[in-house]
Image (cartoon, rainbow over the protein chains, first blue to last red):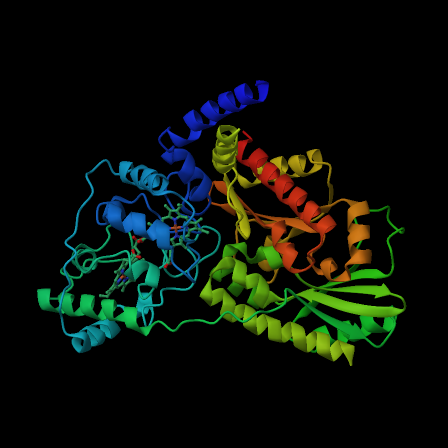
Length: 345
Length: 153
């Protein structure tokens, strides 16, 4: 009986506080989006969403679908776990930044000449959006380091974009541009109505060229056994690092900072190294890569054997959903392996 | 009884929403409206308040600037609990590559961003009962540290 009453009370409490209450859009935005797009939508790792030039040229349908599908391989996550009502609440938050009613676009297909569109694209668009519409390198807005474009040119060959934007919305984007961003109006730039339709048709054709990526299973760390003792392994690791494109930064005991100086376990050692050019490139691609920095190899001696371990940059990179970063990390993984192999000889 | 069970199910289903648990993401991230120095101070205080030892702060920006690259402030904060680190590295040497734990903190204009890898991810490195409990506690602590910094004034 008592149990039943308790359950009834809990039940009413929970139901009234979560299920029936309308989702709190501001709170949802701040939990799910603000870290990247900014509290007030001015951008960061994500692109700005609050610029009138943006809000006033995209439909609610576009926003809704973009949140649902994300931009695979371009950092923007797909929010598949939010309910429709929650996504709508977030769309409203973004819409209210403008205060103007949402534009609505026809869903009809635009039929232009793909070939002509391709030529025009090469001429007018590849400088920013890339040869095949893959977008610029980096993330949203750059605050922390210099870059050519203040706002990243999005990937317009991305399935997440293409399944969200209608032909008409893309057409309007080309005609009006997005005021306050590097994306210009192309009607003012000498393109005629037909040219614009050709371009839209070409952008739409990216839908067909999407290679399905197979996700190979890779381990999260690289581990090699040394044939030497700790002292000689350290010498071998140092030599391998110097022989590669990296600079040796520091060798320290694993326990440094955790136990009194001089009492650290000599059988646990970290070797730090760095390639500043690569670091700078990585941070430009995604400012969050510090998560697997600095470069290091950890040496542990157990039962007379020394094990050399490092993270696997390619595996770490997968967490960021950033195709560009995956490429750089594949290169880093090869360099790590070279060093570890060389040192284990 | 059937009613109670039904209500229990509904209750459990709504629990995540009620407690505001964000679904597991690989990269945990939070924005603070504090400027970098204040956010950094709040971060260090919170790490210590969560009973961790702060072993080192890596000043990535200083290294980059010295090497001739332009960057705003960018630091990595290393932390952990000695008895835990010792036990883990003895039992699971492959975990050593991921420890001590770290938080990345960088300036974004007048605001500050803090990022961490979700420790639940380490299940892919070692997946056993004791470690899973530990990953969960790390994840909770990091979430709580991030909340502290984002609410700090």
